[in-house]
Length: 445
Image (tube, rainbow, N blue to C red):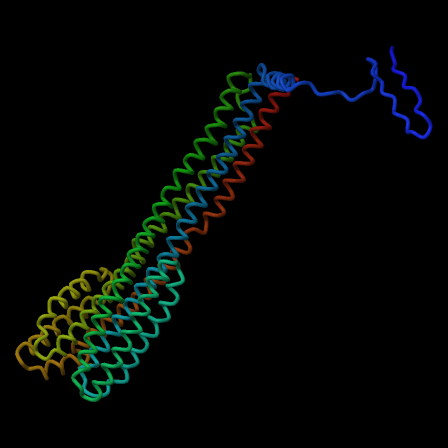
């Protein structure tokens, strides 16, 4: 053994510590070069994966990865369907709201046009209907505009145009009370503004909502493929691991692996049932209450438009025949849009017949009788049948809209618990796979 002797330091200077450089010294061990560390790690991995125990460890790792991946994919599939159906429900509510705005503004225009046929003050009931329709439309516009930036921009322009429309109607009403013919001009420009700058943007937003509903339902439908992939990966990995153990051991059944497979299978079956049930309910609401509600709204908008055209044609005093094609188009839309379950078809048909009488009187030069027939509120008059149609479709629309809203909001209730179940089952299956193969590994020790 050799030592290095350090001479003592002069006085006043600190002494240097002795450092042993012998072969048996206690100096710090220096790590080897990177290449040797890599070689050591590689040797450790090869030893860990060598032979039958190594293959079992690889199979265990792959089974665990497969079941964890199944848990993630299954949970994501259920979450995707739940989110898509929730988006569809929210968009459907917005669609019904936009269509209700259309109905209210066209109803207000129909009431204003009809009341204009009366010289002087309009009926209090008509004034109340007009004010209520405008107030509802204004309130719903503010709500609908908050849905998105596109809605804010489009419906903001609608609100501005509606304010201009209201100003022109008030000018028409003021001149009509004084018997001034210029009031007819104000009313005509107000109705033209409604037709060109209020209703089309609302129809565009309704069409955009319908497209978003279609996209949401497509997303919900595609979620089943993610669940199918989860089943393929998870169950496939577990079955493959068990088949390997059967081929390389004397045991036919590995209990933890078998239990994991059964548990994951049951969870996936329950999840599939929950997804199918939710989609079935959503489709039922979409093709039932929601479609009927949108059809009723479309019918009402067209019918109120036709009623407005009828009054505008009479305001022209014998020269309103040029508006007859517009009335015909609107009435065809109103009649065809009525769902088969509606009870208002007869009332709309009776109104169409009474309208024909009004137009015949006007075209024949009997304008005064035509106006009397148009403004009459008798039960069997044109306005009487139209009011009955409007009241029935209003009640039916409220019922269908409520059914659509509640139905779509309830369809995804079981999807979240099913998603949690799949995630838990997948994680437990991963633990079971690791445990089952660990028992087989113990036999090699």
